[in-house]
Image 1: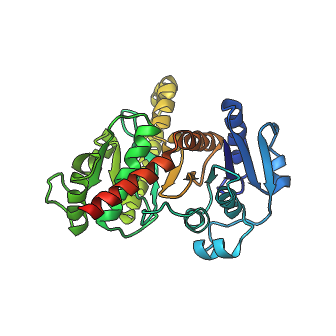
Image 2: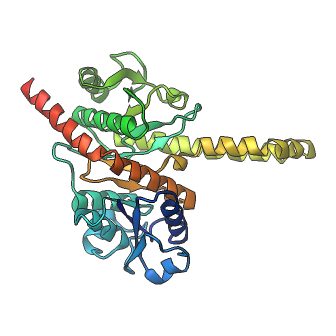
Image 3: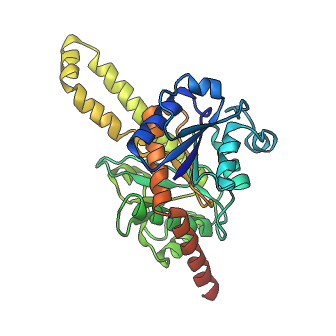
Length: 334
């Protein structure tokens, strides 16, 4: 199994990318990783080259670059070349912690969409109190969406959660402002009807306040709403930990208590850190394309590689392709 990684994408590239890649090849003997980027910079941190190769390039897409223009003009950028490895069949999948919009553009223009998928969805796994997590899609690949798009998101999310997360008949929820069937705007009302009649385990409307309680395994929404939910969860978690740290450092008594509870706090922090679950998959493309968090460390990159490996191993893209074709045929016949 071959995975191409943009070694120059992210806040801590290439050091943390290289660390994550080395940990992955040491853990999974069936993978080969191609690090795409500046060879001189990569080799500063590469202490084990077993099953790791380098595709040299000095061109990089920056976080400030306009995504589509950058992908079209910077043909030898590390991110674009990683996607091209997939398009050429040299790699089975690719990963980047770089510019999200540029990676989506690379996925669309270089890797390409699955036939029958109108719009790919950006889909991270977010934490739940019980530790199981849930898949949220879309979180920003498409600001606007139609009911048919949310149906496709639900099908793709269900396949991923069943095959990669190992959950039989994953529960699919439609993010809404209430749980009643007739709640919401025209998008959610029409989407509800499509999801209700689809071959998925649809549990109805779910509210944002219940997401971290694990009300559903897969939650679908439009990219505008999904992105705001994602940023709200991330921001709230960071703020809560800052407030907790401030409170625990406020006196000698609380500092002593904090020292005793430090292992429990570390466990809690890891549970609520969605980067531990891997990256955000761009579902709907012809091969796995994974967006790792921009601030990824070596462990986060390792998690993204593990997730990518499982997607390739379980042939998630092939199963999505087949299911979407069947769904489209059913809708046409109906």
